Structures are given as structure tokens and as C-alpha cells.
Image (cartoon, rainbow, N blue to C red; front, side, top):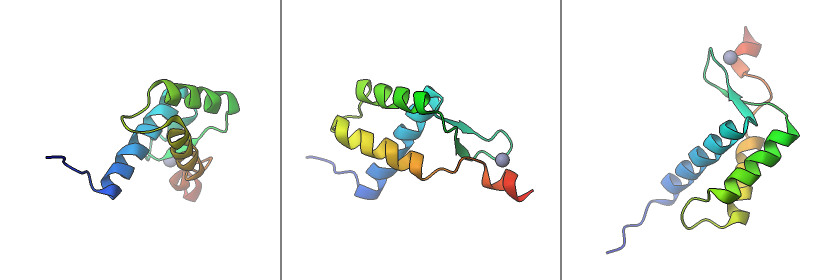
Length: 87
Ligand SMILES: [Zn+2]
């Protein structure tokens, strides 16, 4: 019997994958103090992230869909840590 992953869980997993790819490429970084993921604003690192994503696609995901998720995750991140800003 086929076990279906609930859609929200699949999306969370996919965003986790995209975050790992972006970190790997150096497109984002994690604030050492607060743990927020922060966009480094580096276009070369972003291109590199899309390359890694195409080579390392999660099962059942097309390269187009993967690129969309990467772009969405990038867009959801600020270019500075919100907690560092509020200090
Ligand atoms: Zn911070």
C-alpha cells in the first residue's frame, strides 16, 4: 500500500531541502547568535544553489519545481537577522 505524506509535511521537507542547498552554496547564512537564516545577497552563490539543486533533486520533484521552491525560500528570507536588528 502506498503511504502518502501529508502535503504540508512534504512542503516542510522540501523547504528544509532548499534551505540546506542554499546554505551549501553560500547563498544564505545562519545568524550565529539567533539562528535565523539570512540572505547573503550574493548572485553567484544563488546561481550555484540552483546548480546544486538541479544535480541533487529530491525524489519526485522536477528541476522546475525545485527551482521554484529555492526561489520561494530565498524570497522568504531577509538580508539581515531580525533579532540582530532589534537590538
Ligand atoms: Zn541575529
